Image (cartoon, rainbow, N blue to C red):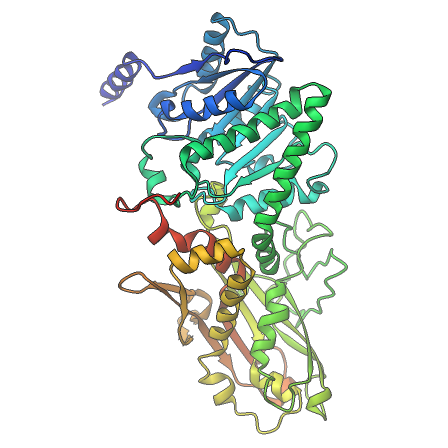
Length: 562
């Protein structure tokens, strides 16, 4: 078997490769630059010739473009040797490059970062990541050279939600697009997809996962060429060229900020863990949270403080749960408590944690009491949420959803909240036990919010080509050998037979209230647990996943929209 594998490898090597380089265009002035394009997985190198030519055309410099082919068309193999060989070939052809830039596409963008931060550290002067992004592991690293991230807003393999995360860290947190010394700009180009950075037939994985471009290949390459050329001029040009090109890059970054603004708003509502890490209310570090712990008791020795402790700007909980979902659970509308004020704070915890227990609670009015006048009542309550993230996102490829697949959220029940507000004759059977609408209503609200908050272009595209979400009645969870099954009864997404819609169903778990909640914490009373759709997951569905069935490139019969 080993001999067969060796023979196969030798045969591939003997076959030669399709590596090539492009000499600078005639009439170009300024310094000579070497631009090494690193192929994506299974992406033929010949497909990068048009984009290389577009960069040469847009740049005022003498740009040498080298495109090495790696073994099996995978940049993991022979990376440094192939790069060095390509540079040598261009030098033998007369190249005298003043600067070296590496531009990686897709997986090539990943491997380029490994090289730049490893054996290639100090050997290249800039990175350009196309249909890629700065890996989270390098977010705070100083090992990478100045790095441009450039992608399309319709990239189905490195989704806009992941690029919005990149924009938050690489642009917003360092002071914005105008910040002096912005060395990791993020630029998204409207209408481009993952394959807009190459040409020819799409590899199978790209075809399976990408979204239709809305810009022709030629126009897309011209757009890419302009941005890459401006970026190189902003780094290596004369003072005048640097200023002019820098202004254009700033403009492109600002426009990107407008593109990702709705997505970032949704991520903030979720409390997305890769913007700011979640707080731990047992060991508060963010003074703005002011989350009251309940019951703050444990049957076993409590777990110690997290290591490291969350930063002072950690995320307290989900604003969506605290400010919208909790009010829907209360259901004060069209009751005498319609003018009551409910203030809720949410905290992130594992809902299975018992060291200590974390339970929702009504602090005001005090347990055992109720407001005398529902119309003027003030209620101070807490909720507990556990966002669930797909483990595949740990690979940081951007292919899989990055937002929470569900919230496991514990609320005080509608019965408990309405009783605390002073409403009389609250019927638990109607408010909670057989109420299959509470969680559904919250999830419908998340979807409605996302549709309204999305850009008009994204919303219209989705409404025309996407799979709409429809919300069905909540399903009551029961008890299993290990207790309530609600924890592991996942929020479900079920496509219709014709795939033209996807039904979303939540699981709920209610518990009757007693004595206005004035019982020991070990008696579980007055709760309503829900599986919730995050507004960020709804937004990600509108921008990415909900488009792939009917607007993706997987369908041979689809005509590319231009």
